[in-house]
Structure formats: C-alpha cells, structure tokens
Length: 81
Image 1 (cartoon, rainbow, N blue to C red):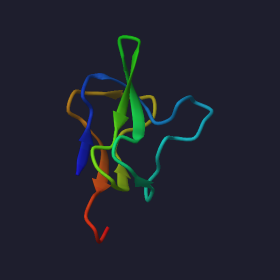
Image 2: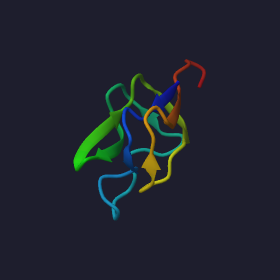
Image 3: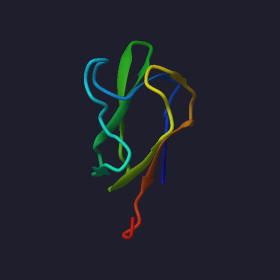
C-alpha cells in the first residue's frame, strides 16, 4: 500500500532535525502511527499509517517540497511481508 501526501507542503521525516525519523525501512508500524509530518502554511500535519504493516520504502527526502498525492511511503501489509 502507498501512503500519499494529502497536501502540498514540506516533508519532515522526524519531529525535529536533530531527532531520529519517525520510521525507517524495515520497521513495523501500526494503524494510526505517525510516519512523518507535512508542513503546509505553518500547520504541522501528521501523516499516519493507514494499516499495520512493514515500511518497505521511504519515497520522500527530509526537508523537501512534496506535491498533493505524491507517494511518501510504501507499506507492505500482506501477512507474509
């Protein structure tokens, strides 16, 4: 499953530049878990996991501009992930 950006904004992989990213490839995530933040017009919007699974790809670089509907993460949600 692909997690896409709900808006145009700046992609942040972690809570702050000197902290670890919220998630990394190979990490197991739960529904509703924060994956990243997209900042738009000074509003911090949490991007959350739509379903439990394993992060297989992070598709956006920290601090970069992302577009509406741009893929941000790939999550394997199959039982044999």
